[in-house]
Length: 388
Image (cartoon, rainbow, N blue to C red):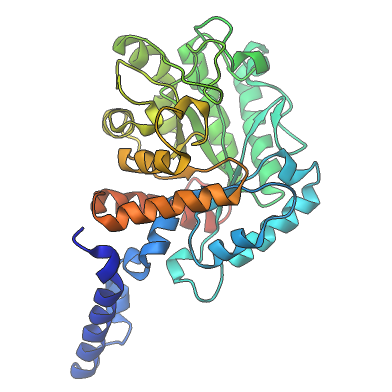
């Protein structure tokens, strides 16, 4: 990167001056020609560039001023909401969301950032619903019910309508785990469709397609799969799934082929460790999982997002901000600071900014992640179905 954090603003100013001079010396040349030729990223400061990797959270029904301030400065890509933020009051959260989106349109922001924030929650179905309303059925109930594919489509459509009604535009669903373990912590709450990979694939694909037709981006999770996990939740402590590479690719990863084929906009990465893919790091901190397996082998070109960075499953990898840096370096586009404390996200942002400006991160890969995030925000700005 060679001093980019110090020189980026100076270089941008110099380029602008050269372009302006060329316009004066060349009669008939439009003064906006240089702007059209510059990429969207060239219009972002380093703090704004780093901000496009960060998802923040907060406590209670009222967002703190610090959250609005970061959004107005382009230092956040989005917000995750929990039950206490919503408080069973759709009108309240709709008003909050309108205020957050208004802050994202602040006049001082460069045009590429004046796009909808990524405003997300978990609206899976059953007990895992942050907003009152559909889908009422759990994934397990859908998988065991008659005409399960129709039920999955109805659940996806219902989830999309519920979130869109308050202005949310990203659902952290569906779960694509293929149940194979005993006492699976996800299955305790009915969060898995089936023990059959093909059935999970069909139902997950139906949910994603129906939801994204409502203009709400879907998130296939938790790659490469948590169906073989036991009772230990990755939120509580480290989880290792000692599966063979063949089993991972033919069973656990199988539903992601369909999710990618139908155009899921996001994939959430698991906080469990998969020794067959990477014996040293959990998937959410693993280059082998995110870049080699998900992007190169499966061909996913959308946005990757970590699971909760404050989770106990990552406790061996430093502070929450340090985990964010590791995840970003491994290839996660969005870092999920979901500790329900804005300060956690601010600290994570600052750690990422300092690391980026130190020159130890791959600048091209960093910017590639930002482009994917900005592309998704622009797609959501268009409104309506996320399919052509």
